[in-house]
Length: 417
Image (cartoon, rainbow, N blue to C red; front, side, top):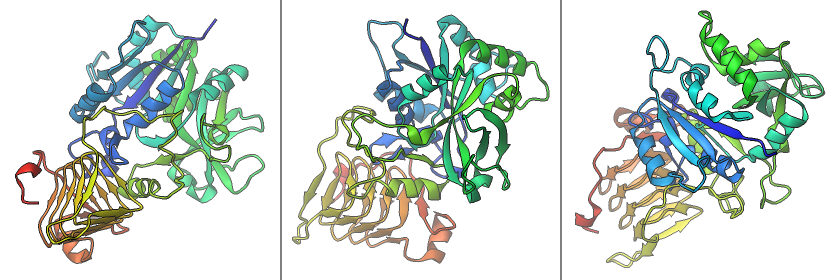
C-alpha cells in the first residue's frame, strides 16, 4: 500500500533580517534568479518528489505571496489529493491569536491533518534556497522506524553559533539539540563539523498530533518545533537526523554536491544569487528532470540591440530574464529580472536587478540590489561612493547597496530609449 503524505510549507515569517527586500512582501515572495521566487524551491522539491498535497501556511505581508501562488501554483486535477492551497492565519485557537510559532501554526490547522488522515506529515520551510529529493528522506524515516526525522547538513564547527545544532549517535539517532551555541558538540568521528538543522521535518502522524495537542496546553512553551517539540521528544520517541549530503537529484551529475543556503540576510541572499552566474554553477537550474517551477509569465524573449550611436547591448556571465532589453548598455556578473531596460552606455556589474527596473543612459550600478520598478536616472552612480550610498540607500556591512522599489510600475513604453 502506498503511503499517504501530507505537506505543510511554513511561509509566515517576517523575514526582518532581509529588510528592505521584505518591506512590502513576505520573505518567500522575494525574487531569486531573475524570474523565480524563494518559495518556488520548496514547492518544486515537493512536486518533483511526488508529493502532491501541500498546504502553504502564510501570515505576514502575504499579498505578493498569494498573488504568486495564484499565478504559478494553482494545481488542479482529477484527484482530490492533488493540491497546493495557501492557508492564511485563521485564528482558530482559543485566544484568537496569530501564529505564535511553527508548532502553533500546525496546531491552528490541525483539522487539516485529521481530515486528510495521512501516514506521514512533512513540514518544510519556505525561506531557503535548495534542491532536495524528499523521497529518500521519507524512505530513511520508514527504514529507521523513526517517529520524527530532521534534515541536517554538516557545517564547519566555527559556524555552530549561527544554527540550531543536532547532536547524534553513531547511527544517526538524535540525542540532543543545541540552539546557536559556540560549544555545540561535533559530528561523531568528525571534530571539525556539526550537524545544522535545515528546519525540514518528517513526522509520523500519530506522534505529531499527540505532541501538537500537548504543546498547545503547555503555558511554558514557545510553541516552536526546533525549540520545544523536538527537544521534548528526546528519550520519548525514535528520532533521527537525515544527512542531506547523501541526497541526490535525478538528472544531476553523480559528483554534484547537494546545495542548501540560508538566505536570511542581504549578504547571504546576494552570495547565493551570485552562485548562479558561473558556467558550472553549484545550483543547477537547467536540469530538466528536476525543473524549478514558477509562474508562467508571457514575456517576450530577452533582447540585445544597438543604440542610436552604434553601441551594442551586451551581457557576460549573467542571467537575463524574459522581456528585458539591453539597448547599447552592458551587464556583467549580474542577475537581471523581467522587463528590465538597460539604456545607452549604462553599465551594470555584480548586481541583482528586480523586475521592471530602468537603468538610465550612462548610469553605473555596481554591487547593488535594485528592488522592483527602480528608475536609475541618466548618469547616476550606485555602488561607487559609499558615503553617498549610505545617505540615500540601505547598505550592508559588506557594502552591498539595496535600493528600495516603487509600488507603481514604470511605464517603459513611454520612455525615450
